[in-house]
Length: 225
Image 1 (cartoon, rainbow, N blue to C red):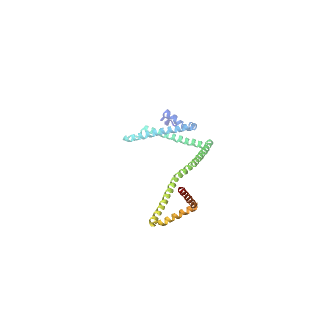
Image 2 (image 1 turned 180 degrees about the vertical axis):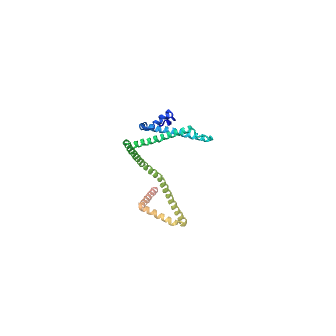
Image 3 (image 1 turned 90 degrees about the horizontal axis):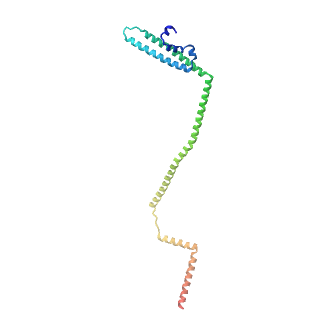
């Protein structure tokens, strides 16, 4: 750096700018370069804001020329802006070296393989869960349908019984049933006679009547003596 520019810097600022150029920057680690870039942005913004504030103050002063302090602030801003550019460029170089290294490629392949394995396991777990849930859903559906089917069957049975009762009611109102008492008694007598004949009760009745007659005659004979 030119002596004129060095005169503008404090000792800390000079050391910082020296670390952003040459071998110092080449030997710095990724973490160190990141920290330096962050600090360079802070210093650049500081001197930019100060220069803008000084310019506004100069404009408010009628007829005032550009002050040396304004020029010094602008030059410091330019120095730290250049440092930000160098540090960001170095960060990009380090990032490309990391991604293109064999170790990085190997790690990337392992990461992809691991993610595929995790996805496969998740898929199997999902299929197993669905297989367990499906029978439960089926049973629940059947449990819901069964009461409905029973209710429908009951309703159908009730409707059938109601239809039969309606038919009987219609018959009773349209066709009156009339009974002939004489024919009914004749039918009962004929049925009774048939039952007696079928069961052999006629012969037993005749036997009982003959025995009863003999006993009665025997009692009469004894009284006449």
